[in-house]
Amino acid sequence: MRPAERTGRLGVGIIGAGRVGPVLGAALAGAGHAIVGIAAISDESRERADAMLPGVPILTIPDLVERSELVVLAVPSSELGSLIAGLAETGTWQMGQLVLHTAPEFGADVFAPARPAGVIPLAVHPAMAFTGTSVDLARLAGAYFAVTAPTPVLPIAQALVVEMGGEPVVVAEADRAAYAEAIETATTFSTAIVDQAAGILTGIGIELPGRVLAPLVRSSVENALARTGGTVPE
Image (tube, rainbow, N blue to C red; front, side):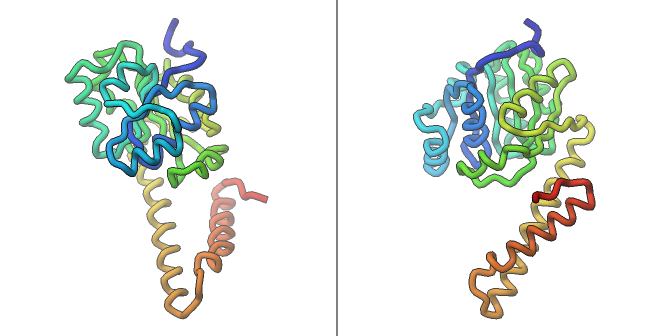
């Protein structure tokens, strides 16, 4: 069977128990895939993994990769390259294994050290801010995911996004840096502006400034999105 023709239930391993990994794992489980394990180190990450993926075993990374047909790398961007290369050096990757990362700035080229092992590289970034809780599962519905992969296996990445409730949008390898810049700009500036405005309101004695700002911020963002072709909720 060619890679692009893969169908059915996959055994999924999650590396990274921050805000993103467990949520995507829960979304994939909801689509019928089997979560075989998650790699989590800190107490906080273990608690998050248990909350989002109850009963899923905590495994070492080598054990998890060995047992998984699809490995999701939901780790910080600064750690992604060294993780991929390290697992390649130890011969951990498996022929025909799907490997998906969630870093916005990288495409499929970051998997270069693992390609000789025969992995199938997928870059899938959900364009939303995660809380790491079940709230995110509802937010995934209709969220856009940037997808980058070699042409023959691009349908696999797109299908996984659809199964998680999202909308895939293809981003070329050469455009990932620009895409990441746009995501960082939207996230950083929106957070900073809300924090600054809330601080000013608190300073003049207004309690619960978030409640005051919420309708204003939402309507302002919706109006701005409408001008750029975005969908404004009714």
